[in-house]
Image 1 (cartoon, rainbow, N blue to C red):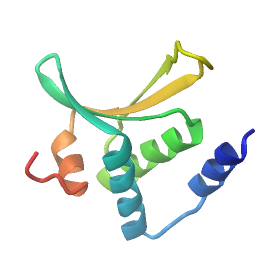
Image 2 (cartoon, rainbow, N blue to C red):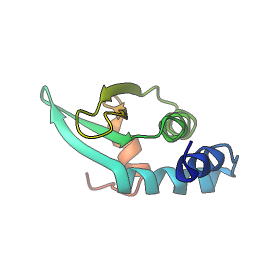
Image 3 (tube, rainbow, N blue to C red):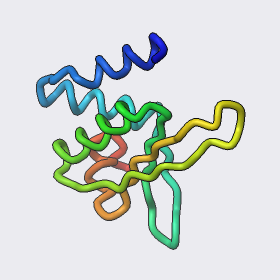
Amino acid sequence: MSFAAQTKKELTLIMDQDCCQKSELEAMIALNGIIQALDGRRTLDVETENVATARRIYTLMKEQFTIHPEVLVRKKMRLKKNNVYAVRVSAQLDPVLKGAGWSHA
């Protein structure tokens, strides 16, 4: 395991206060989030190549917004061919966007 992967894994194990968890989730959505329209409805995908980070995003969304997002896994076809994990929210997207500071969305 690389140093970066090990560090990310260790960071996901830190249990923070509620306000810190919300800020952490906001940052991950801002950096890795993609809002798109699928089948006539908006969805938010937060993508990462690190499984521990994907697990953390899922857990934070579940705890902060009491939702159950989907987790999608796809294989990257270039170079290393590693997995890309996407945590998808579609059903209750508005509270998540509002909580992430995108209330106008």
